[in-house]
Image 1 (spheres, rainbow, N blue to C red):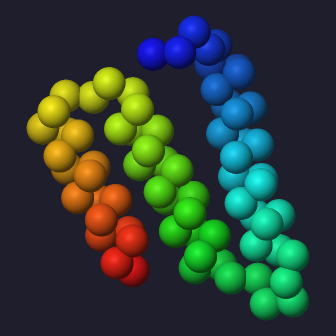
Image 2 (cartoon, rainbow, N blue to C red):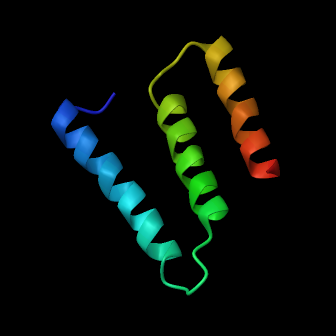
Length: 70
């Protein structure tokens, strides 16, 4: 795991989601579904990158596939 404090990780995640919102807000028709999916995928990737048990890894890989199907 990265040597990142909780405060630094919180800031990183807020910045990531802020970028998602701003990149989707550029058009007149804000795509809430697209932004929501992108944020959900970021959350799943965070879980997968947190060195979780292989049973949970398989679960979150399946969750990621299901999000992409939505």
